Length: 239
Image 1: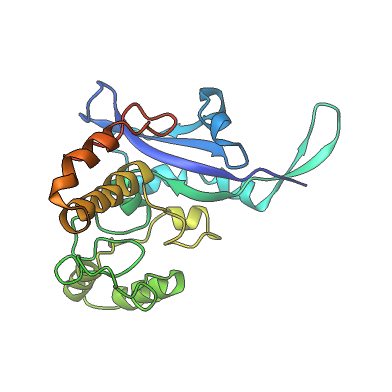
Image 2 (image 1 turned 90 degrees about the vertical axis):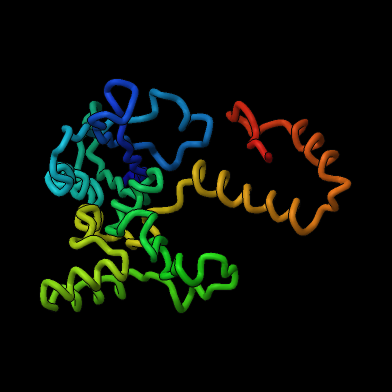
């Protein structure tokens, strides 16, 4: 038995180098490769391209063969050896709006904008001590809530889904990879969320509450001399 876990990257791109009529692309990368090998184009495997304006459910349904790879398929190699290949998808990767749709949630402008917990933009956005354990979104709890809401009248159902920031229908990706936990299968977009969002908040905290104003200029000059991370052209502008 050979196990070949992979991650599936989903992202839309414009044919004309802009977002006019974007086409979603699905790309697989083996998870057992190191960072250096994963960056090589030869190790990025295009799975499919979704036609413009195609229904999302229909596009995902065309990838049903990925479910067979997850459960295992028998393959005969060139030398006649018979092996069982198990290729499970361990996570989906994408930018913030795409990951919201992948998880079956409203976009990031909703009140409950987080797909991992129920923090509210209206009342808890600045609460760094928010209880993400008791207020978390969990796999079976989300399934139970969906089943309960779908039994309501149409008006109440629309209102409840809007209040909970859930899409009207569950993510079709959940049926494609049923073994994955819905919240954990769609991690945050590191480049856009963590490095830009969290790092920026830390810098704001340093300037507003920790570093004295007389040292702001010295800190900025020192920060500007910090070498960027490998693969990064520049570091974030702190101004």
